[in-house]
Length: 103
Image 1 (cartoon, rainbow, N blue to C red):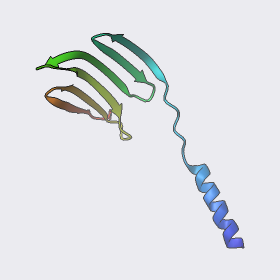
Image 2 (tube, rainbow, N blue to C red):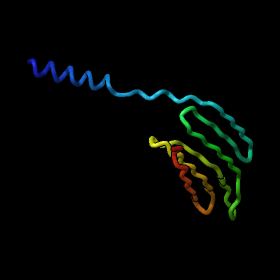
Image 3 (cartoon, helix red, strand yellow):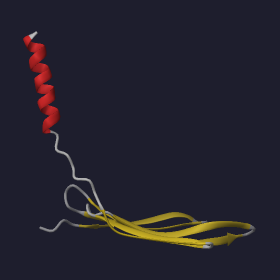
Image 4 (cartoon, one colour):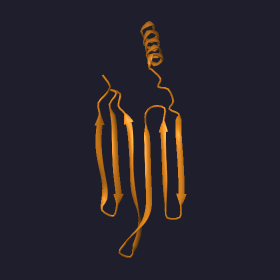
């Protein structure tokens, strides 16, 4: 019985010791929607950002959408990952750039 109480106490203490991350807030945000495309961007307080532009395209007799954009985020080690991309009838093509943490 004592072992069970100690286990429950240890489990409860472990739950309390888990560090809670602060909730990210949106710092900036913009959205534009048109009949032939859209554009949006946002930045958050935890270092995430995204920008995207899209437009209608015609390939043969089919219509679709082409997207160009970028997003970035910080790793737990302090590096910033910056990804730029295009997505269209030729596929998804991302490019990654890693910015080292400030020493």
